[in-house]
Image (cartoon, rainbow, N blue to C red; front, top):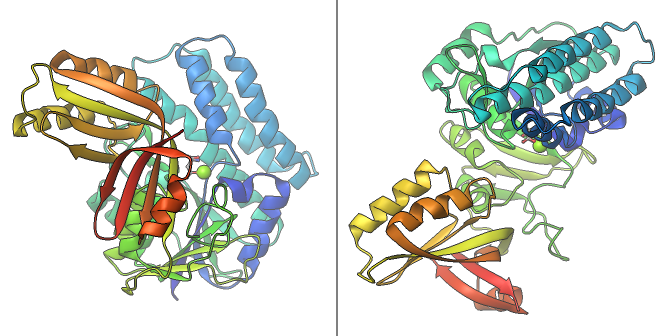
Length: 424
Ligand code: ASP
Ligand code: MG
């Protein structure tokens, strides 16, 4: 029977009622083979990041943050499982005990490694709760530790998947029982494991990617990402009044949009699906009977322009200290520095004597990056910038988004325009 991969993100398991809703969505597919990937509940990953900071920098509020995380989960547990002796309490407690012990110890030398060991627990706990609740609700499922399957290198926080090994392990181990209630496997998004057995994460919002990896390796029939929006819209309703749902889009457009910062799909999600022509559905868990958006290999231009807004951008202007021209050598030096600092370039443009780059203004990375650049180059910067990307733009759409803004950089290609702007 054809296998489907479902992904439920943080918003779809943010409280007890949401977890109940996951069960009711799954009930619509009863009897089918499904691997369900869940993220950490609500905004727990952010809290876990705070816990990492508290622990690693020994800020003194470790216990307080941990209590907050515990309370969040236990409130949900109490609501879902009124019987205090339910084994799920023990299960979740065990995870918290280990976490508590971990943060009592002294930090390792590697922030990123500690980050992954701690932050990953959000997915572990969430998947345990959801799995237990589904059982209660009569949806038989088997809980799978995804770290026994998805193997990565030791690039903590950005684990690179070892595809050959992962493929082999999926083939050997993914349990797909076909018994009563269908064969539901419940597992975690976002996580992987190094050859030494340490947990890695695949990058923030990486659960979509997990779903795609599993789909690729199991030759799944489809992937569905269940979201709190109707599907992929032509703009984020947060920024735009009149947004429209896109019924279908090509893999190509989906890659471009997510690459430029549309947050509905994680950018790495599409490639593993495209390689095997596995369709991706983005659907609403609130209105699960609606069709949502289908992303597949059908080449079609989007019917309307799509807008992507990114705030908190910084525009760097980099030039040789002696006002000489920007030549190939400089480029390779500059790119090397960006890559060493793990800074992703959102737009770039060069002139004779300077090279302009717009990136996310990540306070953990950018000051260090600038310091390194300044050893060889003169660096000017503008912060508090916004990056607006329009796919399938026309002049009217450009004018519309530029009202009240000053444009610092404009980069046009055939289908896409990118504008780095600041409020006047
Ligand atoms: N929980 C992780 C995050 O919030 C992964 C995910 O949600 O996709 O980044
Ligand atoms: Mg999330």
